[in-house]
Image (tube, rainbow, N blue to C red; front, top):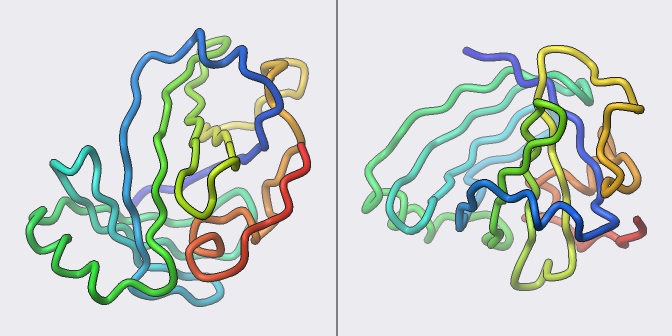
Length: 157
């Protein structure tokens, strides 16, 4: 088990694009989602898949369990997806030694760009990059489970 300490931000600029180290094409979907818990499948580059269980309702910290699963089985489970399948490209961007995961969403969520920062400690605001917009940590409409099961949030960086 690992603790996930996570902050989320809308992205307000494009300067991050010059700093991209890697990108991952992702399709993910939920098999179960309820307050304080979710079970999702993530397929990366159409080559590998993981099952992830998350527990907890605190905005910045949750328990996370993650396991590789056979790609063929993950694709079969697509038939049981709740809501929409999320399509996004995750870009790895470093700033001041911290890894930011910048998700550029496609499909019905096109136009949404969210950066996640997972760290063991809080990063002071003055250490954050200028291309981050409004912090949306704790705003459930920006959680991936909500994006899959609910409406599309109003984007206002």
